[in-house]
Image (tube, rainbow, N blue to C red; front, side, top):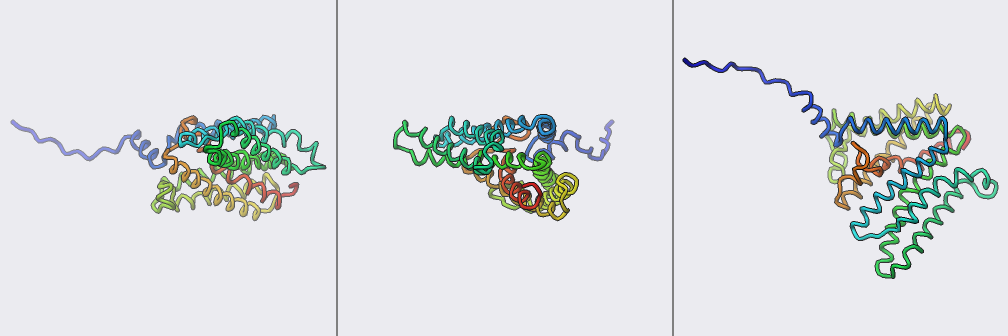
Length: 301
């Protein structure tokens, strides 16, 4: 006696497989990424509320870690940037202007003190390379100057924002806009992304994702402009659009660097994110633009 197998409807894919699919489309482990992002956000908020110099040290540590990651990857390509002067420069550029800015402000504006620190870092990096001889000198110094310009110089504008009137609100606005831009881009890209912006550079970045970035980023900017910075809503629109665009460019530029170096992430230091540099790419590019717009449009410079 034979029995026929009953025809059953295909079962819904298990929850875990749906999570894996979403993670693959996002390009990262979403729970880990969210956890690390929230953790650092809480730490930054606590520093801004209770100990702003601690936030400055956090900036110094983050830029030093990012510079180290970039230096290591360049070294694997035969480019020997001067690590010691670069790391020292990351600390000096962040801490010195904030601590001593008011003492020298009558003679040198704070941004001038930042430039002096950057110039000192450049000189130190060029001198540091001399004992290794002339072979490859230009190549190695060029690598050092790239890292100095890319990381401590751009990162220094975060400290300049903090030193302004109501500096904590400026930093919150800056970070929240970039974070919400990334969040909106991730959500819209995962759910609706079909048209790649730059398929040869960053295949997962889509025009639909950019739309999500603009919606979330501008929304966050308008909210922080009105309730945090106490300026008209249109300032938030200007700030939001500018930071979304330049932050996206920063993300694409770091993707180009990684593709040129033949790597996926700068490191695996941050679960779900990759390296520190992979998290700072948008923030570094957005920092000088955020500082300039707030300097011009938000009272207090």
